[in-house]
Length: 91
Image 1: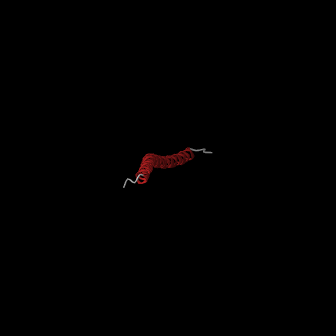
Image 2: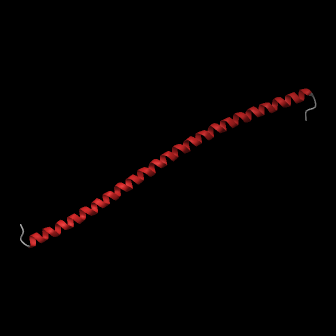
Image 3: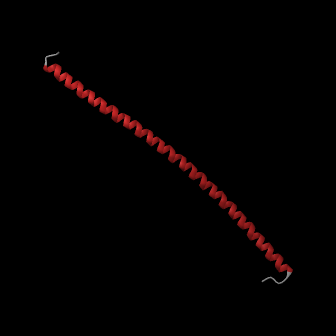
């Protein structure tokens, strides 16, 4: 425990150094948190883009399935019509 003015001065200097070290450490921590925040924001943006792309792909795939089904229906109708015509000697 300090007993003289010199001891108190030395203790104050030591505490000031510790405070400065803590300020520096907190500053570095704040920089690190900011970088983490930026990375998370970028990841959120990428994920949102992936979700949008997936939704677009699902929409395109649904259209493709609908068109394929319609083409299959038309092919069946054409086949029935062709059989009907061939059965009647239409060609």
